[in-house]
Image (cartoon, rainbow, N blue to C red; front, side, top):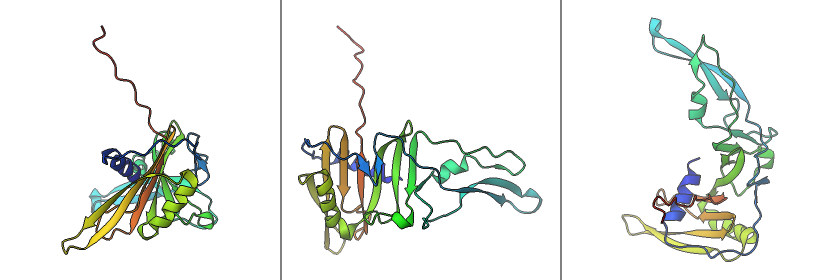
Length: 225
């Protein structure tokens, strides 16, 4: 889920800008429209009991956990909150376990039904940013060795002329690896593709992020004329 922030941060620090695109972009990603409410239910949860300590000092707790750890066929798409969010509901076994509250702001993972999972998204899920329950950003992992094919797919959807910046990574033996960042910039949408996350020399994954640009408040004039 951190990848949305990671990719958008990389875009901000790299010294290149995409030329403004004139075509109105398709605002959907995997069938979900950015700017609208995410029409998904939460993945099925169950109450689990755990214990900590030894002997008489043992403490017993209950909390929530998702029934299916990984995507399954025929389950339908659903979203999962972070483990930290689930931990907020953890209580002593004798206490009341509150119902899970709806998520209106934050980042969740949307898990695909394996019967209808897109091939471009190699992890079977994408990260979704919600603001006032509306989908404002999508980020997903791609295979680095399929980056050029992903780039062509994105060109067909967002236009053939993204801004592209090429980079190179070198290891201690002098071997090099090439990667690039491509950016499509629209008035109401930004699309960023990173062919490799370059977390390691042979990082097998890259990232695509699609976001509605945040509106920046005009600076307040604290010293008017």
